[in-house]
Image (tube, rainbow, N blue to C red):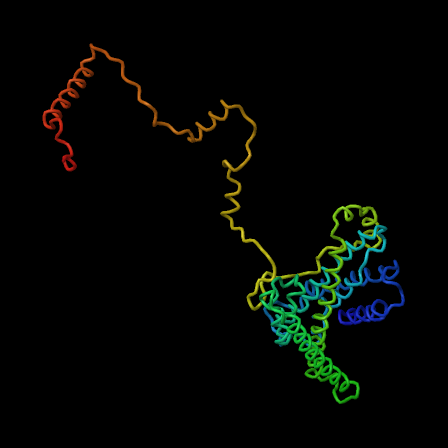
Amino acid sequence: MTASEDYDTIVKIYQTQIEHSALRQDSLEFQNTVSSTIEKLLSLKSIIHDKLALFSSNETVEDIATKSLKFLSIDYYLALLFSKKQMSQLNDAMAKNKMKLKFLEKTIQLFMQFLVTLQDYEILDSFLSKKIESFEETYSPSLNDLYSQPNHSEDLSGAQKKRQQKIEMFRHSKAMNEKLTFIESKFKSGEMNSNDEEKLRELYIQKLQTLSYQAFTDIEQTLYEVELLRNFTRDSSALSQAQPAPLKEISEDDGGYTEKLESLNKPLLSKQGKVLRNFTLVDQKTKLQSKVRGYGQYGPTMSVEEFLEKEWEENRVLQGGGETQNKERNEDDMDWQDEETYKARKWDEFKESVPRGSGNTMNRG
């Protein structure tokens, strides 16, 4: 099968076997289906981005092939799959909640990656784009980031302002859904031909824009669940009781599936120049400087004599400033006698030229 057919199959599996499944979400069969679907989608994503190289960071939406547009929603479906993931094999309820919290945090990151990708390709509409730009941390938004609030906590208009923003969000979302339904009805009735690439492109872009509003709604719902689980798992002593053995069993049953965030390809900066994640600049000079052995580094244990010898070799011992030793008088040393005679004469000449009491007379009455 082609990559497009594989993707359609994976989306269909999610819609039929996961989203509308008759099984309990904490059942082993359901969780195995979720894990295997995640693994397939991650593998397909790797093929699309690495092997086929269908997307490039310096492209615009016009540069993307029409049949490739659907792949921009991969992160959206990955987020939905991770929102269903649980550790049903764990016996400890607190440990289950802790792992569920990690899956939900990953879900939010994937939803945000989906929105940022659409924003980079200028598919996201201006309303949602402004929302994302206002987030303090792009890939880890809070409930307060979703809807702007008054700067002062004493301002009681916050609830009304939030309600107004939610109404506006609902109106935009409803308009997107209605437009998508209208375009799809045109294709079903035959008024629009699937061979018409321009109309098909319009359909794909409209689907992505509709999913963007659904993703924003899902982020809000997930953040409420995250807040609840964080409050519930705050007791760190209870979290330490989680048994590590079942985690190894799960990794073996899932055929090498890992819970790492390898699915995220977060760039440092967006195309608009906004910092998307934290980073540290370390130049070569700083790296070399960190290797220099100085007083800030721990040295080996040594005796006082060894330490002083080492300091002397490295020219770290200050010299001078002490009292000079008086030369031993030697009456037979003619040079010493001449020096002393010269000093005495100089002193006599000074006393003759400066009589006693001829100093500062300004304050004399």
